[in-house]
Image 1 (tube, one colour):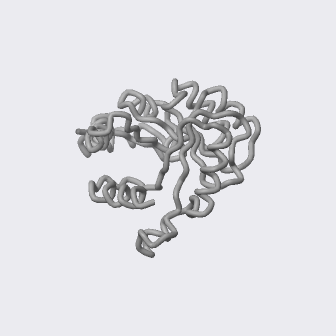
Image 2: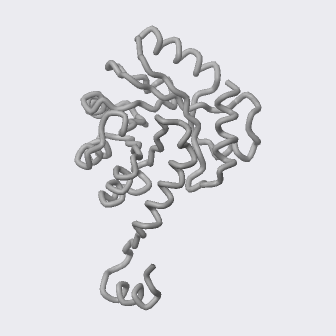
Image 3: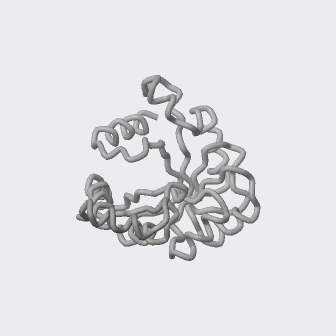
Length: 196
C-alpha cells in the first residue's frame, strides 16, 4: 500500500494527469472473478481494451488468464503486440472495416456481434451474440443501461445464418455493468441467458 506522503511526492515529480495502479489489487480482483466461475472450466472474462489500453495492465490480464475485447484495427494491433490472439482475443466490430476484419481473421479471434450488419464476411470459428433482453427478463432501469445487442427475433435469424455458414462455436453474451463484482449480478445475468 502506498502512503499519502508517497503519493504527494510522486505527484510533485510528475506532470498531471498521471495514473497509479495497484498491481496487487488488480490481480486479486481478477482472481476473485475467476474463482466465482471456477466450476466452469472454460470460463474466460474479457476486458474491454477501450477502458484501459495500457500494455502493463494488459499483461496483468494475460497473466490472470483473461481475454481482451478489441473494437477496431488499432486495438487488434496492440492486442497482437501484447500476445493476445485466438480465444484470448475477442473482436467486436463497431463499424464495417475490411482491414480490421482481415486482421481479426488472421489472429483467429472470437467475434462478438451486436448487430446483423457486422456479420463477418470471412470464415470464423467462434461467434458470441450479445443478447438484448427484450422479452421481459430485466427491469426497465437495467434495460436502459444496455447499449447494444440483438433482440430475440434478430438473434434467431443470425443463429440460422451462422449455422448455414458452418460456424462451429456459437455463444450468447449479455453486457455487464462495468466494475460490478457482486455475485448476484452474475446470477441474474445467467438467469436471463438461460431463459432464452
